[in-house]
Amino acid sequence: MDDFYRNLLSAVLTFFIGCILTLILSRVLKNILNKIAEKTKSKTDDYIVKLLIETLKPLGFLVSGIISWKLLMVGGIIDKTTIGIAKLLCLVYVIRFINRLLLKIISRWSNRINDISVSTMIRSLSPMASASIWSIGIIFYLQNMGVQMAAIWALLSAGGIGAGLALKEPVQEFFEYITILLDKPFQNGQFIHIDDIWAKVERVGVRSTRLRSINGEAIILSNSRLTNGIISNYAEMEKRRLVHRLGVIYETSYDQIKQIPKILEEIVDQVDNAIFDRCHFVEFSNSSLDFELVYYIPTSDYLLAMTAQQEINLEIIKRFKAENISFAFPTQTIYLNKGIEQINTINS
Image: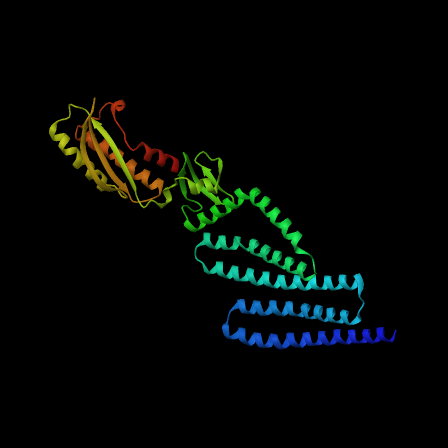
């Protein structure tokens, strides 16, 4: 009985001494680290100091409690259970400290990157990093508690193979998501064409990308389909090249035919946001003499391009009427560039 009280007294004294040392060490360490942090003038350093002190105090109390409990020499299942719980709490505080520190570093890193898509990708990796740290911590705890890990490793290996097969597609889509964010074939708000789909990108997700078609319905495509397909990104256009053919009747005189390219060039040059490229008499078709007009609209804005095209078309009608030049019968007029016209229609 005397040994029990002696051990109890030693345990209590050890616990209080440990708590006092913990408080003193925390105060001294806080003052030292604060002085160092003041020199760096960084909020991250202040956060690390605060986080370290918040973690050090409970860890010191727990370690003092573990040492004090061992001095009691209780033994048996109660002793193992109590020590196990105390070690688990210590592990939780350590992992919590590492996770919060890691998340702060990731957040600071992502904020320094000007590219929104890359910073979003970096922040999306935070849950994975946190889960990895917890997994390592739990394995370390089980080994420390004397658990035989051979059977657990075997189960984890078998489960890992099964999970790998089951999660093959989601994991693949996740890496395709990273590929999209890094390569940036398109971004939110841009208009793209892939596999006969014309739509605007609304959101790039971890597994799939959400598009909004020209008809208004939402289209969900897997990231792998986007990365493996041929994508036309019309938001990257610096200028639009428009190619048109217009036909005049065979009764048009030689002098009029010779003047048509010059007339069309003058019309394009007079219109804002239009750059003339060329105009030639290119073909004797069945019912018309065909001219090919090529000009550029230096904008990716569909409305501006269509406004300029409309002005050119109206001016062509006006000038041809003034020069007494007649268009060929509409059904015989050949319009190339249907693909571009379709694109323009979709962009609207």
